[in-house]
Length: 132
Length: 286
Image (cartoon, rainbow over all chains, first blue to last red; front, top):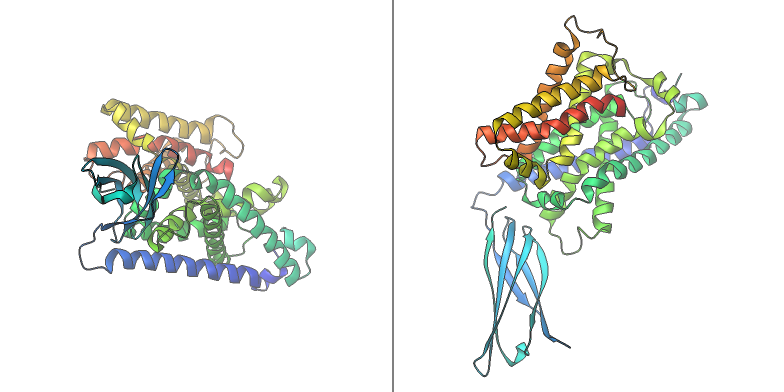
């Protein structure tokens, strides 16, 4: 036991870090409680897909896709589907699954195609997800 | 005077220096104890799939737990409740810092992470890391002689014993409950006879670790604070607390949501086995 403590004094560093800890705990718990009880409306998953620029590769083309969840609920096993309809009427399809998509979170994904996606119409959509 | 700072006995700078050393130890403890969970994928996803109100409850329950651990371990020898409260918050701050540093450096969190994700994952991971920070002083720092000198009396009290058991059970349960294996074991076992067997084995292990096997820090055969046999006075209530702690952790993590009472209790018995080992070895660790 230090003389400081015997006299009832606590080191300033201990007080400072303890104060930060109390503040962090209060802020995090407060934020979480607000998130849990402060939202009156039904919570939702809202998935938006944003296509990036196609990039040519030796084995085809890749199209980066930004998967965003604008909702305030998480989604698990988000199924994505891409359909590329080329000028000659041929259709090339792709599918992938995003393991987890946090609320208001973003995940970067990539679809690969054998033919140039810029030579046709590329349709992207989320086909479903699992409620965690 | 017994503590590190007391031997130097030269006032505030020495006290600050001793506390600074304690902080460094605590950060090391937060990383050491927290790393297994910080590197567990289920914990990353639980951070944003857990219900917010349960995560908040977990944080609020962590505060008195950390204060109790700080009282027992402490960054320096505590003289009262006030110091323990401050040290509990210090442990939380250091656990949170350690969790943030590790999660961002591993790329689990980054620029693309939403605020919900960051708060959820950090809040979840900060609790075991903070427990590590609180335990660090008793585990990483002082020599045995010094520790013996500083052993607070309440750790020997009945309430203190039970508190340590809950803390040990909680730490082990925290490490196991997020994993799919707990669900898998429950499903694989299926029959209630397995659950009963697990409960009996847990009770025996708990009793053996605390009384029978001559581990370091274990009890004398005759418990000072109880007139009943130790199995009745400590092992049984200790195991009841282990089961309650396990059920609480499973519920917080959403593991028992949608399960019937029988399945939920079976899963509690499964988690109760490592929980009982944690409770039994808490005295050795602390």
